Length: 275
Image (cartoon, rainbow, N blue to C red):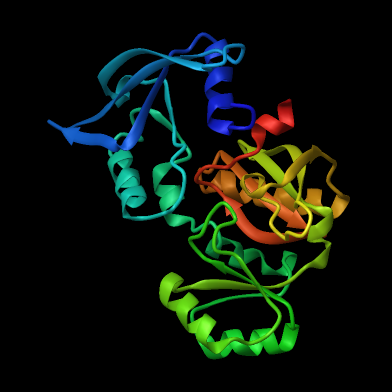
């Protein structure tokens, strides 16, 4: 509860006198042409050691909701895709944030390929020859699975290791290969976008000896400002995302360069911004 964005958002909407219903994706069904979720009405209390209380267990017809907030954490797998298809059937009857069609169509890393002029040198590939050429040219390279999340399975390479690359590609398929930016040691910047507007930014500083700034990997968050260049890029992406019906997103900068993660499925860090 100290850092969790989902709990923070639920608590804020509760303060506005809405009831909170919570369900797991595995408990989402289509029954008699209705989208039914088996879940819980819950109440939050940040002051209590046990910060939530289950009020009632229930099956709920989701078109009865005022709004549905998708906070399904990655991995972006077949369960995730199936969930978006189920919610697609009711998106014209209830407000859903973010639009299920949009989060299915926007790959969080591959979508950034349209913004490569704002990024460090980057390729998206599962071709080992291309990756080797990239490492040879840029010496120090970050490898990320295109459907990875939370800083998991990110590797920093400073030499060509054929056997490792073969295993890594076999496990993850498409990779994002990016020139390493040493100023990550000073932190990255997570920019929050809501309804096409830039609403705030935090910096996440990696723990000593790490190049991973994710809060779940020990990164420390502080509130900072955007540079003029970062603001300009952020506003453009915010405008583009709103056209795509993405109303809540997070984008990241390292050394004034977009690092290629357009977080649309379950952006985190918002609680830290408003603490």
